[in-house]
Each structure stands twice: as C-alpha cells, then as structure tokens.
Image 1 (tube, rainbow, N blue to C red):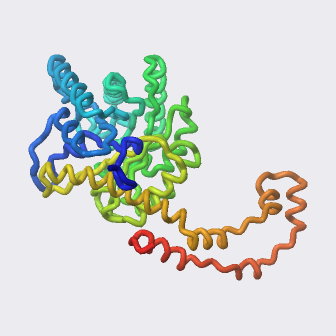
Image 2: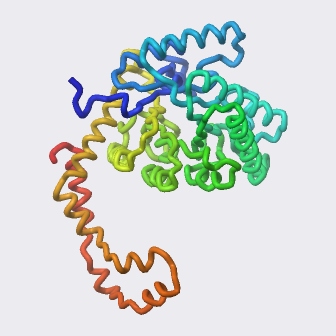
Image 3: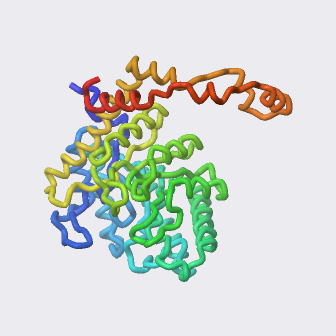
Length: 390
C-alpha cells in the first residue's frame, strides 16, 4: 500500500535518457557500463515505481548520423516502450554542444552558417519532440560562451541568441506545437565562461524577447551551486515572476565541477528548503532528475539511484509538511513576522498622500532594533525536523 513516502505519478518525476543511460565515462576514464538503447532505458525506468516520464535531447533518441530507416525503427521501438511502461515524454531539447561543429557555440557562433544550422537542428528537434508528445522545450547553451573575450563580442552574442529564440518561437506557433520554452543557465563547463551564467540572466532576457509569454526558465541545482549561489533563491525569483516552467533536480558540492549527484545526497538542508518552496508554492510542472549514478554502479544500482532520487524528494516533502504543522516553529514565525497593516498599506503603493503620512509617522529605530529574532532556535528546530526527532 502506498504511503506518504511512496513516489507517485502525480509528482511528475521524470528522467532524461542521458541520466539513467549514462555509461560512466568521465574526462579521465572510459565507460564502466554498457550502453542501453532508448527503449531499454525506458524499460529500466518502468521498473522504478513512481516514474512519470522520460525526456531527451534529439541525439539521445536519434543518433546524429542515423539513416531515415534507422530513425523510423528507433522511434517505433521507443513509442512501444513508452506505451508498455505507461510513461510520457514531457520535455525535449536539442544537443547543441557535442558535435565538433558547435566547438565555438551554436546560436552565438561567429559563423552565420553554423548559427543557421543550429536553428535548423532545433526546428527538427522540435518536430521530433512534438511527435513524442512533448509540450516543454529546454535550451541549454553548453557551448554558448568563450575562453577569451577577444574571440567574440558579448553584446553581439546576446543579440544573436535573442534572434534565434524569436525565430524558433514563431516556428513553434506556425506549426501549432504548443511549446513553452525554458532556458537553463550554467556559469562554466564545458566553456570557460558561458553566456547567461545564472537563472537571473535569463529572467532579464525574457522580457526583451518577441514572445516572452512563451518563455521561462529551467534552473538546475548543480549549476547554481557551482557558482556558490543559493539555488532556493534563484527558484524563488522564477516563481515570483511566474517563469518557473521546468526544473532540474540533482545535487552538487559547492565550488566543484559539475557533479550531478543524486538529489539531496550532498546538501540535504538546501534540498529541504527547495522541496518546501516547490510544494508550498503549488508548482505543478515536471520535476526532472538531471543527475547520474556513481561511475561505480551497475544497472541494478542505477535503478536504486533513480528510486532514491524520487524517495528523497518524497521524504523531504513529508519533512516540509511536518515543519509547516509544527506549532513551536509556527509560533516562532508568527513572532518574527511582525505585520502592521497601516504601515504596510502606506508603503505598498506610492501616492502623495501616503508619502506625506509616512514622513509624519514616528518610527523608533532603537526600539525596532531591540525586537527579538530567535533565528538560532528556529534553525535548530528545522534541523531537528530534518534529523527525524520532531
């Protein structure tokens, strides 16, 4: 019987083909797992209770040099595996970083022919994603950057990126794909410096696009932690602007290379506040685990990686419920959050009358500074919830 910790399809937990299908290669070592084809990866995920869907880059599903006949067979087998396992494709994306043609970028390349090829490749990837039922399309500019600013004008790069997205928005509309676009930020790796380094960079770009209503963000835990940022704050900014279209869940030691650890395995306190934010806000989109099992794992252990990612989320969701229901914690929050309706109303919206009233209001800074803020106690109670004694 399902309990509060059992993953369910209602949570929309998804995995990329490139995640559970990762073969354990790293920059210093050869693969440690034999490759699986897309249908086999779907079958593997089908054995992990609670999985909702699978996502892919175009070339995760169809190799870049596949013949039409090979592509048709792969799609047929993939669709059958989806049906057999009751999984959906909720998101698609384009690989604009692996092939040598993109060694100096795709949308931001200095070569107009390469920029055109990148847009063309996205158009075809959008067609493939739509065929599989995807309604979300993610853009990660893994090669959109530089090692030396002598090589590319950053202002021109932003313009080129905007032009590509505006074109692809119009293409989606013309084809009635119904896509929402989500942008994924990363500060570095594989480039020395990647344009649109953090989620806030894309939140600033979106209002300048021709179709901002179609565009949002796909923040990833590891990418913001690489830059030493608080990921919860980045997600909160996206939520506040109603631009959190998709999210990548994993974990990461601060300041390291892109590790893509199992969700919650490195920083459980950060993961707790992230889950609490998503659940409290009513976020209803997919929760994608963009992570990899340890290189030492075989495929039986890869299944445990997938199950563990979902279970950790469910555990933290239950912890968030307990935190919200804890009377002592809620009492502290009531003490900390001091609301005065008249003053709040005065500063909420400017008017000459409100400005005059505010200037004439007596506010005692010394008394205000003495207000108790029991943050140590609140944080300790949070830790006790996380450690399971409350």
